[in-house]
Length: 482
Image (tube, rainbow, N blue to C red; front, side, top):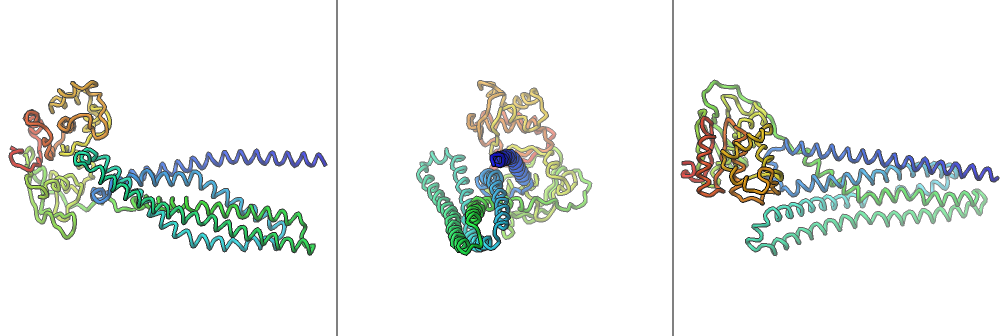
């Protein structure tokens, strides 16, 4: 007898060891799968962002896009990493328990199986409602993130106009919307758990009553009924666990929908170009029409010829369409009709990357990234040497102020480069254009942020940069161009 007990103990020990080993392997595989899947999804999302037209960014909030990239991706990662393992475990346990129950008594097994349709009905009723609330929760979180991002980006303006309290009230209102959506989503999804427990308790009670009757009649042994009661608990656990995971899965489905919504957005299309023409012009506009909205035409029939080395002044009041011309030149937007040519070739026949290699821009908005001044300047031409960067900075009269900084060219600019002045930021963007050494230069109110003395120095530098180079200069006033 003792040998038999030892055999059973050894068998159980071996099973526990195998179970532990498989558990580690399972965790390793699922972690790799989860991380790999979300890594690829993030990569696809980032690649998609590069292929979306500028109009998408004009009509969608930055904070909401960031929320999809961060919060929604994390939701999917968490579910794949943990919930999927539980789901697989529960499914295997469910199948295993059914097998062992059938080997004991198929009649008593039927009693347990009767509750399965009832459990599925509960999930079917509650899950769709839960899904709707989770979709609202993720949308509300995206809007909340957008509001936070916008407020912190413009915190100086908020403080200048004493708008802290209204912004806090606006945040509280948005936070309240998120709270309501999240509360409803969590509550509705967690209703599944007690509902399933109730059904499972009914199942246990029925098994005890029917099993007791069968023991009394002598058709089933007491040991078998005891085993069936144990299996009934184990049978109900996977169903309850799967139902309990529903809220996590619903949140993940809502997150996945938000990500795939972006991945399914129409991309920038390569349009069919018309044939090239022989011309001395470097840039030609032929009967160009354009509108951001179909019912509001901005250009109807615009033609222009630009010779190499010419400076084209684009002057006009706000909203006249000055920046729109630049957007069309760089193919941030495509024309509604008409053709824009570069050296006689339709720009729609070129990839956007090839087209933009011919241009460099200095914008009114001084975009600089977090990093050293040297890296920010080299952004204009990545293969530029340190000497090239310093020469360009001298030409743009940026070298003087850079050398006064504690770390010179190695000075680290913070986010939005707020640790240097607006005028200094403008000088860096001009130096960046010098490094690019473009065929065509676009200046969009490029000296609006610098003082009169610096502007004169820049004009002197611009004269060198513009010599023999085609340029488009955007300004509100003709005096700026002169």
